[in-house]
Length: 279
Image (cartoon, rainbow, N blue to C red):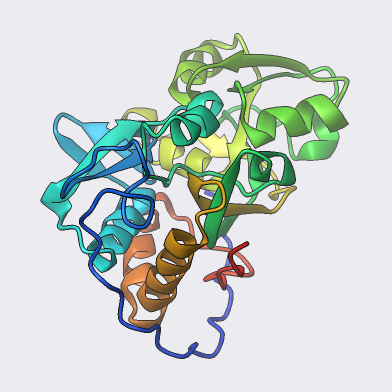
């Protein structure tokens, strides 16, 4: 199993100012046009083990834990959260139309996305990786992809990376990463590519024990941010304060161990990150 050593935690930042409870459902606590009242609507992935996974009425994963912590700091109890599935290709639209107030969904901060939405964070740094069948030694990293068939998700940063930089790859795109798994297991594709965190979560599931493995080292840096309405610097600042507090009080590290630790995954260099200034 692919592992990396966790980066050294930097000196503790100054404690964040106390956050005011936000129960109005407006742009400062919940996105304008969102759930309103004393509820907050948060977008997550529903199909990513270790990060954002729906099992019946339960929601589990690192993104979920960060979202619950931030919501609590904003004045919302866990029961006040309305979870909404946020596929990669729909995230900007969900924010722009007010269907969600915040998105925690392995949402890489990019310049193109900043044209439509704003980001708090980052709250985690991942890297693009490759998931292959356990008996396949033909793929050992990004330099062995020519002529291979890969699968990723429509609208995702990893899919665009392959299109832009690996013209020899045959890329198949689906709506969710879980749709790629049957094709990988049957030999219809050679690898799934996305963030190493997501791949580690899938590889660690009981039904895939001994069948899948991560190949090579990560070949990008993905800064996971919290998506919110463009220009809402007030809410962005409050989310950043909450992320900083989560890191400083040890809750961030505990969430990593509880959700991604079972996959033999440890965060790489730069973790835990320092949130960027809101703009």
